[in-house]
Amino acid sequence: MRQTADEEAFRLDDTHRTVVLVLLILPTVLLVLGVYHGLLQVLYRGGLIKATSFLGLEYYQGLTLHGVINALVFTTFFEVAFGYAVVAYYLRCTFHAGVTWLATGLMVVGTLMAALAMLSGSASVLYTFYPPLKASPLFYIGAALLVVGSGRVMWGQVWTIAPETDEVQRSAMGAPDAAGVPRWP
Image 1 (cartoon, rainbow, N blue to C red):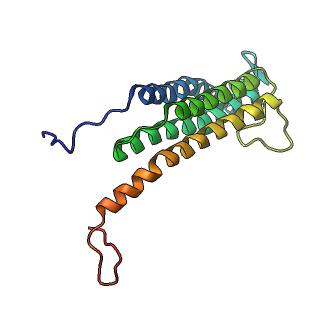
Image 2 (image 1 turned 90 degrees about the vertical axis):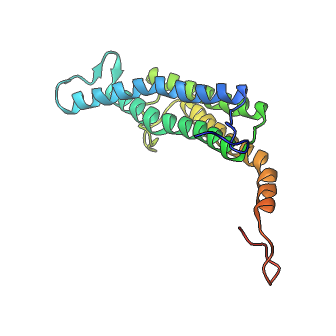
């Protein structure tokens, strides 16, 4: 099926294409580490590993790595990458490159800080960060940077698309009804 001029293929600009790739590749690489620790949990729980430590990692350290990487890091990075691609595609808009790199940088630095704390054994708090368990400040600062970075993405998108969305809505509305309220076609 051929595309018309209005349906011309849309491509992300180079900055956002690179960011989307980083946001998909980095967590996928980390996912391997998370899945590995998930398999170790099966071996622990199945009684095949009897020790509390295996290959230099404690049981709860591996459980924390598994949960944080799989539940928080992978999903957050994927959602942000998906959001960039989908919002840019459907609204045919581009986002401010500086805001994009700032948000991505915060997310990557935060993830690496938290990963360093988990791998060093100073953050065995599971992925829900249970209050009686304590982690190094590096872990909590890293987790906060991941959250702030992903939130920055959302506000950057709202800041970019709010005026465009208003224009799209005005141009898509039909003639007003008898009460003077514009109708959607």
